Image (cartoon, rainbow, N blue to C red; front, side, top):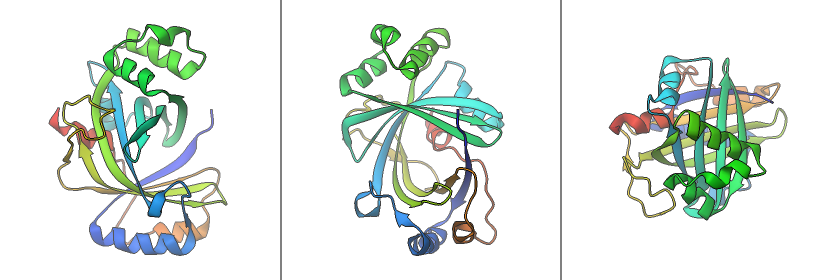
Length: 223
């Protein structure tokens, strides 16, 4: 399993303006982003003891979480993702689902998952049985992504983070979501074996240090 380095910074509105200009000068927008940005909708899973949430808040070195995700309000392409962390390094595994498969998972109709050819779907099936993983929270936000080929660097600016409260209407693009308190803005910096100086300098801000931040945890404030 390959892990990537990852830094997270919580920003204010002024930081966002400065970083947007710096990143545009040294990096290129992700070609998948129309007009330099896209919207993200995720549905996170947790167990009855909120292990994924507690592991994040407690800073557990080895942890994981599962989510469903699609982009720009278009549920025709849905991803099941498993995010793993180990000593500050991150790994993501992904498989594409149909809308019907995603809805079946949300509804708890899981029998078909046991014989699915992809191991990630079988793993989620096992953990929905053994740990009672279930969908918990919808998370929406807007993302501005930038890429830099040397080091396989990706920098993202995330804002307008919203929560679906207790709604599980993941596949309904019109599902009502509300802003999380404080209107947080987040920068994530991810790279493989090295971070080029040009990017390192661009993301450096006086008084800002990399720190833990979880959009999932922010969106669980309502329950």
